[in-house]
Length: 477
Ligand code: GCO
Image 1 (tube, rainbow, N blue to C red):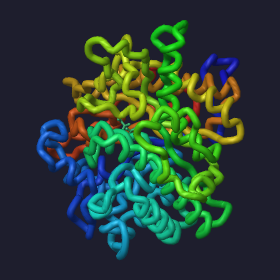
Image 2 (cartoon, rainbow, N blue to C red):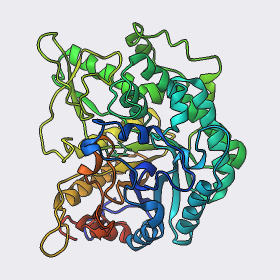
Image 3 (cartoon, rainbow, N blue to C red):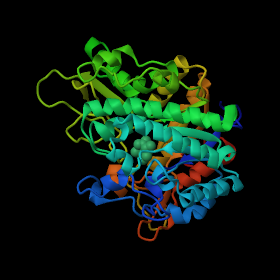
C-alpha cells in the first residue's frame, strides 16, 4: 500500500520482517559439541573446490556467539529469524543416534529467540548432508529421504511448538543440480542421472518430513519449503525456439519441484526432455501422494533473472547463468540452452539486478497457485564493501538493492499476491559456499580476524523499515 499523506510504501501490521542465515555458513565449531562431518566439510576441505580453500570450520563463530547475534537481531527489531539446523550436529551419521549436545544448542537458540520476541523460522536442510549418508549414495539413494523424515520427526518432538514455521528444504534445485550435475557444490558430482534421482528424493524427503511433522505437531504446524525459482526470459521473444528454451528451463528448474509439491505430478514435458537420461522409474507408487502434502506457505528465494536462447550448435555455448562454470551444465535435459550474459547493473556475484523479475515471479505464483501464501525467504546482494575512514560501511548499493526489491514485493502485494514476509539474506557476512569468504552478503559486517560485528548502513536502513513497516528512502540511513 501507499500512504496517502507521505506517498511512502507501507506494509501490513502482520507482515514478518526477518533475516536469514544457514548453519554451515555461520556456525563454525565444525568438530565441536559432537557434530559429525557433512558433505560441505568434505567438499570445502578438498583442494580447488572453494575460493582460497576457505572452509566453514570457524565461519563467523555463531555457535559460540549466538547470544550476541540474537541481541543484534533484537536491536534490529526483527520479527523473525530464519536459520537452519545442521543435520550432522544433531544426528552425526544421519541415521541412528541423536546428539543431545547438538539438539541442546538449537533448543537454547530457539529459547533465546522467543525470549527476544523473535519468531523462529527453521530450515531443516540447507545443503549440509551428513557425510555418512553421501557415502551410501547421498540424494541418489531413496534411503536418504527416509532418514530425513525421521530426523524431521525428532526435531518436531524436540523443538515442537516453539517454531513458527517449519521449512523442510532450502533450494532443492541447488542440492540436486549444483551438487550432482554441475558439481560446483557438495558433493561435487557431475552425473545427470544422479541429479534427477536427487530431485525426486529431495521432493520425497520433503513429503516424508512434512508428514512426520504433522504427525507430531498436528494441524497447527506451519509447513513450508523454500525454492529458488528461475525467472528466465527469451532472448528474442518472437522466436519460438527461444521461447521453448524458456519452457525447458522452467520445467527442469521450477516445475520439477512445483509440479510434485503443489500439483501431485511431474510435468510431462520434463519427462520428455529427460527421456534420454532416465525413464524416472525411481518414482515409486505412492511417492507423489507423499510429496504433495498440504503446504501453509511457500518460501521464495530471489536474486536475479536469466536470458536464454537455443544454441545453434556452432562455437561455445554461453553459460552465464550465475551458478559457476565447471564445464558441466546444471540444466539436465536442456543441454542446448544457452544462458546469455545479462546487461547490468550487477552485484559482486556477477548477478544482474532486476527487481521487476521479483514482481513477475510473485504474480506468476499468484496466478498458478492462488491459495498458497508466499514468503520471501531470501533476497539480498553481495557488494565490495569497504570500511570507511569514519569506521562505517556505507553500502549504498545494497541499500538501493534492498529498497528496490522490497518495493517490488509491495507492487506484487498491491496486485493481489499474498506475501506474508521478507527475510533479507543475510544477517551477517558469512561463508558463501564455493566463493568462500570473498563475497559479503551481510547487512552486518564481520571482521573475519576478530569476529567483530559492525552495522553497515543497510542494517540501519533495515532497522528503520522494520520499526514502522514503511519503506524508507534510500538516503535514510
Ligand atoms: C542460496 C542459499 C544461500 C546463499 C545465498 C547467496 O540461495 O544460494 O540459500 O545460502 O548464500 O543465496 O548466494
